[in-house]
Image 1: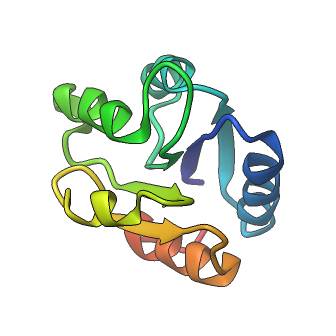
Image 2: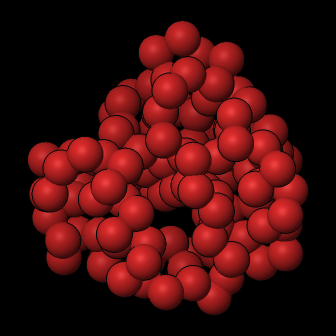
Length: 121
């Protein structure tokens, strides 16, 4: 079973996405900030990260850079979901594997997760 880490300070979005992923058979762990996400990353070693851009303390791009600094995670797929920074995310393919603009199609997100994790849960 693949583990997906969702990092978003908007609990409703994180919960809806988590429920959808769990329904597909994924194990989901959530963090409400990038700092918490980094702790969870080391502890749970997920197969994929989905992160928001606008978060307190550290934004999604800074979070992705921190992930990429860790040798074990330099190739970890990271999906950015954003309300307004999609252009910035798309211009950083070294940080983000995919970018979804909010509101996004949940089916498209689930398809991207399945493709990037490389398995069906």
